[in-house]
Amino acid sequence: MGEALGEALARAQREYWERTYTAHPGMYGERPSESAVQAVTAFRPGGALLELGAGHGRDALYFVRRGFAVTATDFSPVGLDQFAGRARAEGLAVSTLVQDVREPLRLPADAVDAVYAHMLFCMALSTDELVALVGEVRRVLRPGGTLVYTGRHTGDAHFGAGTGHGDGIWEHGGFAVHFFSRELVDRLAEGWGAPGSGPFAEPSVEPFEEGELPRRLWRVTQRKPG
Image (cartoon, rainbow, N blue to C red; front, side):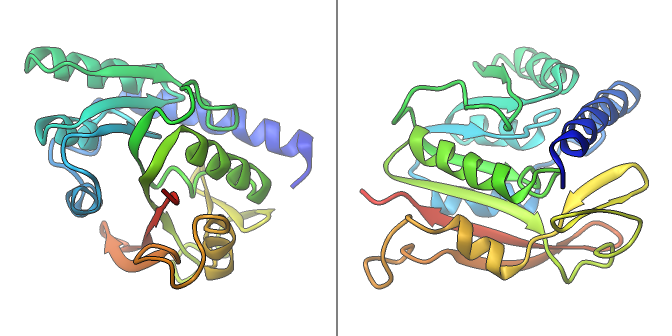
């Protein structure tokens, strides 16, 4: 995927999500995703948690209610405003940051205990951008901190459908997805520990399904060496 195409696709996707969140407030409902419910079992209770691609905040609110100190990020100010408004209505303290994950994360090193991203990694991000993003995640995580992310994979029904942009990215119905191969998962886990050094030295990869299609995803858990 060339640089010009990548910039144009990123701009188009940002506009897509701004329109979508504006037209459909709370589009994913009030309940947390299955992935968020599963993720808390991998995180240190009560720690500082960064969510990437929080959208309108259904999972971020769940984490706050479970006692985490949450910073929610998204490249959509509309989605974050919806999340912050719901948090205020419940009297919950939250922090939000407008963040394009193609840019360095706006947090200092060793700032959080956990990073969570539900389907953010499988947005229209090139492999090089994903590698850079995982490097940034590792930077902001404290030693021993945990990353949990989910992504649609190459077994999904929409893989290969619609408009192909190269690098595993396919656009269907205006929504571009980077479909993950297992090789990509392993590449993003490089440097997160040597095999045999602990339970998360190699990534934990759990398949699951979501939605009516259904979307086929992996939930990946990996830990920064401590």
